[in-house]
Image (cartoon, rainbow, N blue to C red):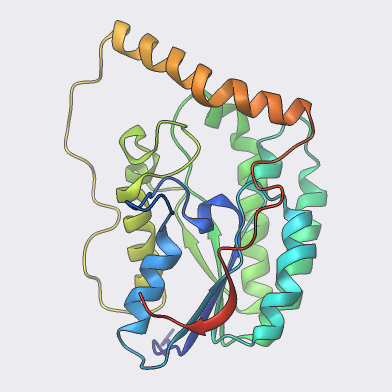
Length: 256
């Protein structure tokens, strides 16, 4: 399929993945794949406009309620929608209900843009992912079906062995690091029909895994700094995104 690769505006919808968590900048803000993609698109289109409505911790129902209608009203040429994984990672999850809400978002967004992009999200390889694999694959299979029905693109990051490598993930084991975000931006760039600038799925160099003591030390630090606070928020029915505004709430000229 031949794709028109020139876009004049881009609206990103989603959760922490699209907000850019763990791709930190010196000023304490996060960059992420959507910002990187916007910068590359802006370089090809004078007056390019960009909005990023993503907020960390959002469930698919919140994304539908708080972001999709706003994004649809913007009328951006390009829209990306990534959501549902926060739901799937919870102990009790009705995947069919998640799929239904995701479909609401697609039905709202697809008619308002020239190109809608969906994703099979990346996952850090390990025992947690294996336990969640059936739910994730059910969600991703449905995303493939939605894309066919609504003429959307699907960027398959889930099947990437490189993006599943633990070296692509931050210490919290939930978010990609800077190199992971860079590769996602390249993957979307290529899916939109642009010439590759690098091999986003290139295998990482072989390395010796850390020893037992280093792994246990990392596990303890992860539990103390990330897992326990996450469990605390779940028990209190709170989210890391509560009260947090959208990253770029308006479709405005991109200035870097």
